[in-house]
Length: 91
Length: 429
Image 1 (tube, each protein chain N blue to C red):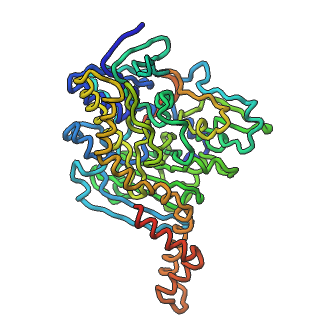
Image 2: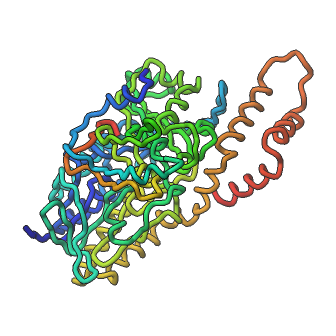
Image 3: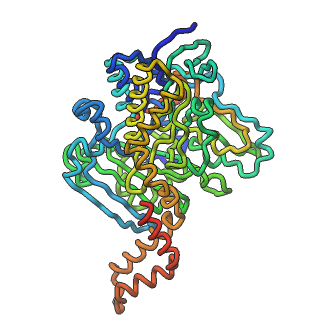
């Protein structure tokens, strides 16, 4: 039984674009206390490293949680370009 | 490059394909645009497809559509530590089409539905992300995707819960966290004979479970349904859970669900073959967006058309109903050669008359009731503790049932809350 998130994300197929479909303004994140993106992202694309928010788009499963949770407008959110991103087979 | 068609539908999920199919079948020119390479690749279900609405559009669809199992068993389970308390209903009567529910896998089902629209004459264009609406004099006149602009008399926004088009058109402000749930799902493979033995099923019969008490006290719940050769197990947590400085990260919620002994027995020997997540409209009536403007109609999740009343969950059925209503509105607009709000408004009228908006109004207090923090923890704990007391062997004098009940109620919940919650549930659900 898979239990860690890396293994779970490993079940997915992606077509990863060269550029990120989500842009994060980390300057704003510096002044954000609750940092809900880190808790809410189901793919753990947001991480806290040395007290700073880091983001990687490659594992994104395009749910939109980060955009809705961020009330400071730090996240410029879009879907990946056509054909790119995650491809579920059992959704 | 500018081209023109009658209608553009953005998004090939159930709402979009229902609209495109209805229009194409009535000989209307329709372009169905989907950002995925294959329809269904971006979509995630958390429940059962009810058959009644789709049957009106495609009679006996179950003979042709990729159905996993027919749901003949429903189980509402209160989870509490080592214990579980179930309300279990089974009936062959649930098997009679079209009044039954089906488990489906969206990659298969959405592909099938889009193909039916294509066969009816719709033009399906996949792998295209629509970037924005094209406007002229406050009227939507088409879409833009990259450098291309395609014009249409009407655009149907079927672009899902994160609908960029609905927001661009000003039909809703940003989504509010309390109106949205995050669904996280694992599909777990198991041979069909094990599924049938484990859940007391025969042939293509299936079961659907709802779990309470498994979200660490935060509003939400768990779900499970059987596919032919896999289980779909998931959890929905309302987004405010992540706004507070809690310690639980989203992926940990499904791990928490999986550690209950009840769940462990269900998924034993199965492997997770796919992990997924998707947002769910949970706001009910107050979470609805505006449904139309000049040249634009909003259908399905994009409009917030979904309803969770605890014992029933409607999403795909509502989506299909809204797609059909949108198509009817567009045909009427064609006859009048008018695509302004004046004709688009008919969609709102049709929806108001339909069971969709009627249900959403009837159960407009349901989202608050089923988000009660007591329902998430205190009641599941109480009912399991009470049952444990009833059935355990102690070799001490048994208290009378009522005394035992009162002791637990006063100890664990407090009577005023029980009365308030009971009244709200009776009035709201």
